[in-house]
Image (cartoon, rainbow, N blue to C red):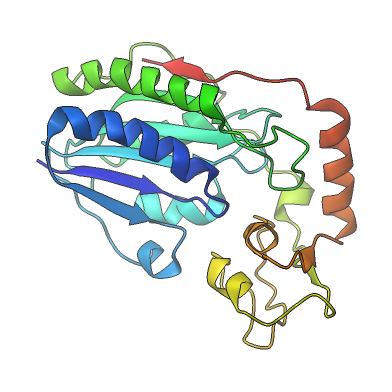
Length: 259
């Protein structure tokens, strides 16, 4: 038996939730745990096959109410082999719409037994004012509570009983989500060319000369991890979305569990 903690987490909010739920499982299974960071391009290019006695905790952020579409072919290439899975979506306090259901459906189609699912909240990538500093201590306590409840299903090999919120067909991706967007701009006076943004980018969008390669997914990793504060969004569509979020999505939302 192996425990796999699998995640895509450009700004590390999803990683925190997966790690917290995973810790609950690790303490109970007392087996080897393997991290699979799909934020890394090389990790997304590999194939993954699991065994019936394996346990997988998977997490991804929500982009436009859906699973990040660059993950779809990665998940479609996985071989579940009857492994038990717990799937998690982390969204920026607006809504997770169909993302969690889409994720659970993909895992089921690939031969996993989805034992539990949950939606958590993380600070929005576009604005630190929306769900600021989340997941916070309260969220991590909730993640632990969820982990304990989810483990009961995993231990018994029982599929999730509570219907996962979402609709089929899934929410259509908006023009905003599909349209190419400019990468966050660089302030030449602040930039020290340390390369942190290049290392953080999950899409290999930033060239060695800091040029935009046209593959930006607007995840904000380069903004979050620039210690000099040299990167910021200037794309009009992103700034408009940021304004809408700050105007209507600041009330605290709570995690939702499906067990």
